[in-house]
Amino acid sequence: MKILMLSWEYPPKNIGGLSNHVYYLSKALEKLGNEVHVVTCFEGEAPLETIDSGVFVHRVIPYNINTSDFTKWVMHLNFSIIEEVVKLISKHGKFDVIHAHDWLTSYAAKTLKNSFNIPMVCTIHATEHGRNGGIRTELQSYISSAEWILTYEAWKIVACSNYMKEEINQVLSAPLDKINIIPNGVDAEDFKVDFDDLEFRRNYALDNEKIVFFIGRHVYEKGVQILIDAAPDIINSYKDIKFVIAGKGDMTEELKEKVKYFGLENKVLFTGYMDDETKKKMYKTADAAVFPSLYEPFGIVALEAMAAGCPVVASDIGGLKEVIEHKTNGMKIITGSKDSLKDNLLELLRREDLRKHLKEKGIETVLEKYSWDKVAEATVKMYEKVKEEAKGTEWEVSIEKVKKKSTGTTRRKKSEVVKVVDNLEADEVKIAEEITVKPKRTRKKANS
Image (cartoon, rainbow, N blue to C red):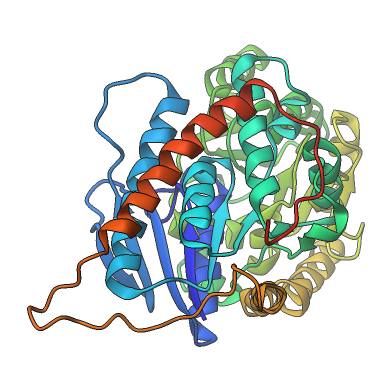
């Protein structure tokens, strides 16, 4: 099967969990014998065209139109994605399916789908409503509308958990039978790293101190502020402890000021951005990883910790709630409660037998349920179902090799190019109208 992935981030561009998700899913799909092309945004010195573990990666540069408006920049990126895919299809033929990730590729996905009659599916990794606990600003409303357009146009929608399936249904009015639950995955082999544990941990803590690790964006929904608020009481009860806080975000300086106010600078270490290799070593070294999220569609960081054999303490919410079984493969805390966080973390730190049990069961959970191979297999089944449903309709894709002319070049028919441009211009107008007045959601037929 020939698959087109659209994602605004892909390694080395790594803003959140979406980048790694697309990277590992694409690799796993290629291992199953599929031809996978990822079209994404450029990053630093990364090559614009490369083959990464069998996956064709095409990085594009957004239109160089000066703007400080992020939504305009996203549109510039989508124009560049469309241009790149038009060239790919002109040169190598159509794709069986387009797979778009989150609202940032909505416009390209919609335009390419309707220009070339290629079925499109999407993965909604999180919603703007969920991230902000509601829609309050014009920007949030715009993004939510872009999410709505993507799910409306998609043949199938992927949600990473039951929690996200319900949210997509309620917030974006997507029919439940259109939403497939396919969890995130993790590669346990990636966490089998060989290093000097004692030498590594001495960069962060004293030999007698147990390490409590948090990694993630420093934003309200990740709940890092709850961990900092609980720190004084935890330290009063268990003095041989060191909190290692990785990542950064809008709340970083506020959190540092709070630690200073508590007088805990020698007990809380802010590392800033932590690269993958260091992160893996920290998971292997830490005595506990804490994820006190207030909103978490899935929680890939919890799976990573489990894969590395690090006991997890996590909020009883969202996707985390579905992954963690209390005192079986992790510890659940009452969402938003610093006292619940304190009590569960202290119990874990004081009980070596519990830490050992959670470590063993955590690894077992990952291997049994959350390997990328299983995720890829479920994704291919969804693609195949879409192809089967498309048979006999205008959306049935016939993959043909492009015949090269004697000159060695392949030109696109003028009429086809005009069709793409017309569709793009029409979609711009339609998107603007839909965002201004979002219509009531109705079930969209796949071949309409």
